[in-house]
Image 1 (tube, rainbow over the protein chains, first blue to last red):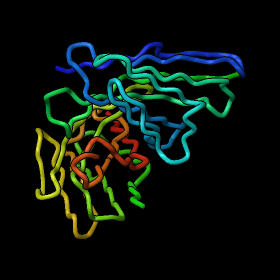
Image 2 (cartoon, each protein chain N blue to C red):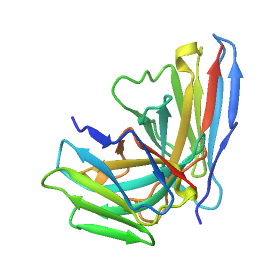
Image 3 (cartoon, rainbow over the protein chains, first blue to last red):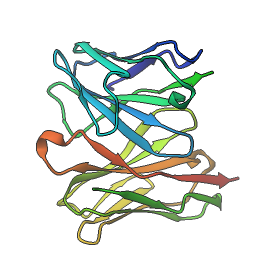
Image 4 (spheres, chains in turn blue, yellow):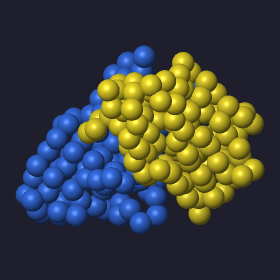
Length: 117
Length: 115
């Protein structure tokens, strides 16, 4: 089955530093990748949608200069949290649609827990 | 603006019980509705997907229904087991086919099945 990985699974950083999270589709090419954020005991909120080779589309209220998304290939998308602050601490999850597959199906990664001190 | 609500927020039942989780959405113009399972600190696993034209879907002990006109969906779990303990999320996708990948999630129902 289609597998999506994320790296790292957990990261702790100091306030003001930047953190990069990778999302990879391991056995398929991803047409589109999505980035979600989940605060404790809350739902997943879509942050942005990225297509390979083009700029990401950000949801309302998400700062594109703070959450940099690069989708350089059909198997890799990265989310960089720039100048992280404690309020950015959250669980970040990516998902991907399979190229040529059912576009209604999103395969989710295991998530990355970010803690900013 | 589409809003998705799940009731109850938490549920604890003894093993073997049948149970129902509820999901409601404010805008009936959806493309489909999905139910997911999330284990603590983990990603999501898709359980069932119901197209807007469908009324229900079944997979094993799980049955999901959809009443688009009233903005409701239910997830029925038969003969619950401790392994069913997890958070269950429902999500609706926007109606435009170009936006089918955009999911709007409810806050989830955390289920605990006690042995």
